[in-house]
Length: 164
Image (cartoon, rainbow, N blue to C red; front, side, top):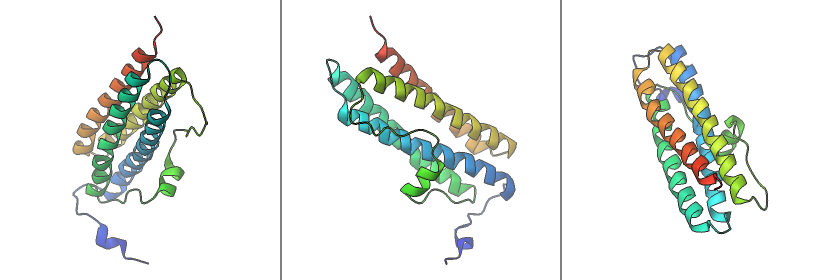
């Protein structure tokens, strides 16, 4: 077994308090990966008269989601904690449900992703609360941008799914 002390990043933050921040970040990270993969799945399998619009929207959103994963994981490490290590670790921590259906209609795809993005917002709010309780100003500040991005994705998905 390796010595994990070699990975303990120096920080002036209280280790017990940053553990709760890291747990919240790792949960949000697992949900981000789950949402990324679901968004790509729907991107690959969308069909219908709005195919091109939805295909491009979902690809853009997936790229944005994947783009924050490294920042989330690195924030965990900067607080002196350990982050996710595997797909199994993601599966154990994710709260968003996978969708393994052979076919999902475009409207259902957009609705499901909208709801998942709003759940991710809840995860980011938990990160914000834990960070503020730990006096972790950097995490508290950076999570605001991630929250805004998830809210924007939910808004776009809502608008794209409107009829009429």
